[in-house]
Length: 323
Ligand code: UT7
Image 1: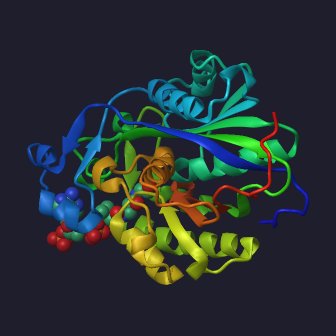
Image 2 (image 1 turned 120 degrees about the vertical axis):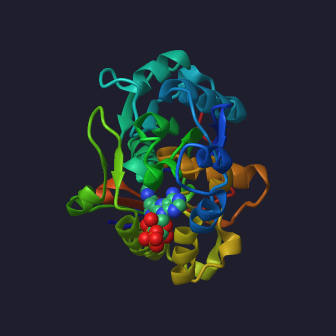
Image 3 (image 1 turned 180 degrees about the vertical axis):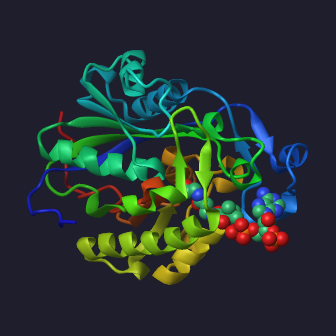
């Protein structure tokens, strides 16, 4: 993947928001219907509970509205809506079209499916639009995996859940937050994680685990190379929230202490496109990121896709947000 050319107009995140359905399903709830245990799930994944319910449109509208409110941006001035999702509510039209209407946006809107890497794909895509003249973009990552999960299959039912996270990106003069990025896919691995239309998720957990660690490390290393930084300069890594052991293994190989990783999967499970923005928002809400800090986002998912981005929080200090 290319490095960012000099003098490209950049962007900064000026607002964020999240949404989780109110219904909580604990590991103990799953013990009632599956041959599993809270102990096994916590030990093998780190997950204790997850939220299930709602629609992709409904959750997206909730997180998107919060991000818009926080940024103070008038919805009518948003130039594009990118909705990363692998679980749209309908085949046609795209869920983003309905979200666009509900939020009062007057702009182009499209769904983007890169599975659990979708939010980072969307963020990179949005930076491309900003380089081409767009000024304000809403990027949302939402998934409602409960609808495509076989709740009788203990291989997958313990992992997947629903949620949404959103950010508002605004153009700045000069360098923005994004310093380096990488997008990847390997279609030859699609058989390890898939869901046919109208069907449930099928997964070879061990194979996905093995590949996940490798491709996260590969992608993150490329992004850091493009950004011209090293792992010890990363203040916060925001990984896809699939399994604490995957996060631990990837951090170990990258040489980033696990204490620098943002995790919410203990309470959200794996929410696919929503997982990185949920973890990012949690870290931001808890003041884990200061102006100038380097933040590494890194995801992997069905496809198998991988995506990463290095952001310098706040972007250039002297960069006025364009009106
Ligand atoms: O967004 C990407 C989505 N997917 C992923 O990230 C999945 C990546 N893979 C994983 O997270 C892990 O492979 C799993 C959590 C899915 C499974 O963990 P594991 O450590 O790879 O377990 P395993 O499949 O090797 O199974 C170990 C044992 C087996 O029993 P035996 O053969 O050792 O007697 C399984 O039958 O655990 C058993 N087992 C379970 N026991 C209780 C498998 N699933 C369960 C379960 N509850 N849910």
